[in-house]
Length: 415
Ligand code: PMP
Image (cartoon, rainbow, N blue to C red; front, side):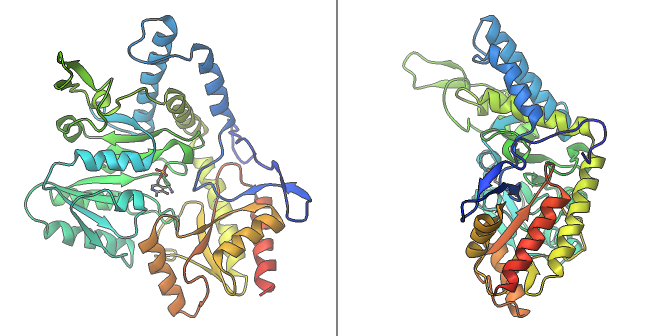
């Protein structure tokens, strides 16, 4: 294993998959950015929790007490994982999309939201009143453009919304500088960290971030649990995101008046929460922290360099990138291949080689359109509409990367 000390292993690495001709090969999963495979340690945490499987918060039975304690401990684990302040809120949601929509729900009316068009739709679309900034030509220009837009915003609350790492190019955005420019203009900053937290330590307090959102299923835990962490005041002042049990402290005789909990976690987590999903998400946070970021990052950077240089050596392959090598990257590489529609290429990688990638516009239509237009004008005529994305992480080996490079080379030659 590339990992010193603890050896996190993921479930399903090299599971047998059928090819179109009926042969079976070990699966090479290059779709971690969509949903990462589950960690073995997460499966163990879920198994340990199951004997006391019970409702949280309102039950008086022993199992409810144990489950409630575990659920609230998970909140503190996530707080530590994100380096969130003690007085910040940590609200469990379904995923990043849900977290961003919750934040949009809580933003005071009249707030100017500044957002880049390069965002994933989850982060681009929920805002009522947004200034949308075109793809910046460099990390420095991103900071300058955000500063200009905030300076020109009308008086009132301001919120800068940015991605931490792009789900299309893997490029990491200059979070500390963006946070500083937001602060300089009296704005808050909210960060979509869905693609960063599986790969890098993110410390909200050190970076000066006001809100962070992420999803458990991209962090080696199962589907259905996510997080919005950040400053409490807007969350406390807004009405409940979902109205129902758990959000109210009391309801009048006829049910037409309710007093909502002041505590943002209770107020915005109405209904029975996804307890196992939350425990799984927290177990993933603990496992990554205990492994240490250095071996994780080194492993990933070695594979990333190998994949990028391998693809660059194949005639007709073009990688999509906004900033070239001017920013750090996580394990995500999107590309187009001359003569191939992205969908056909992705299906051929699966059916002929047992390699799982994603194709399309990755829920970031304006950004992918921008990147493809740029590559079309540079003479790469194909893949006008979509690209193929290879993304990886803990279970990925050099052998997987080499299989992908060889497969792409053989398909590119065939056109
Ligand atoms: N933001 C980014 C950067 C993402 O990559 C994704 C998932 N593709 C999301 C938000 C949305 O995450 P979810 O589907 O878990 O809500």
